[in-house]
Amino acid sequence: MPGNSAPITVIEVLGNSRRSRDDRVAVEEPLEIRLGYETPAGRSETSISITMRTPGNDEELATGFLYSESIIRGLSDIALVKPCGPPAPDSGYHNVTRVELEPDVRFDLDRLQRHFYTTSSCGVCGKTSLDALRVSGASKRPFDDTTFSRKMLTSLSDKLRAAQKTFEETGGLHAAAAFGSNGDLLVTHEDVGRHNAVDKVIGTLLSRKLLPANELGLMVSGRASFELMQKALMAGMPILAAVGAPSSLAVDLAREFNITLVGFLSGDRFNIYTAEERVV
Image (cartoon, rainbow, N blue to C red; front, side):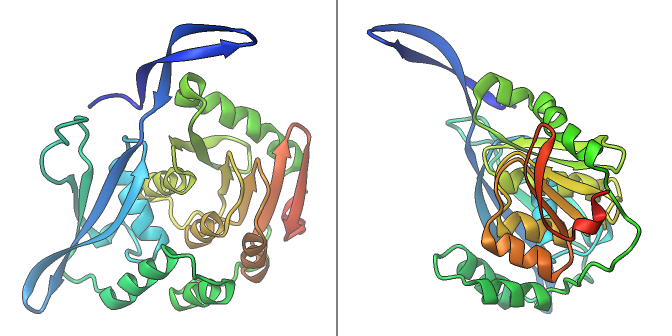
């Protein structure tokens, strides 16, 4: 399969001069996730999501997405994950991934279709989003002895940047990582979509049987949105740390479900928005 970056020629302008030079850009391709499942009438298939992503780790992206949306509850729900159909003729990438569920796995297809229709529009509100999480089985994080040190947290942004190989080539990718309390990055992924990078991390943790990730944190290279906070919550993570700012709904979600939210993490400084007792 082609790589995650593609060569191009650009015109570089500097002051009054311009020159042609070679450069690279991050690849962006569509990925359709299809779900195979059992019905009373037999085996069926439906398309549940189309996302623009950087190719690579498509299986992890698909399974991480299904886990964070509560369509699957564990690795045992999955019978098979595979590319579907031939590669796209214009790019050479497999842009359809099919996830086959085990015959006994049940889910509400009508609720699923309503949910994705709502969240793909501009009409979703905070209350609706939080209520949807309650319905999906998300629960408030209990107070326990899981902590993360200030010194460890301030080391994360440099470690994440060092792990962004394609970003170094293109400057055009987000990154996400799962980290332990000792500061080790257990899983790191890049993608043009920050939500895709997180899904790839969650899918990898799922394949390693590390979910729910009750003692791991999630680090993201950009801002902390409601969607990313939702994914951290569903993965069981007690802390989300972001290089950028959080949104108001991300703060609301973190406060309600008792997740530690850290923003503007850079160098030796950061802000704690919720559940500060986990940072020691």
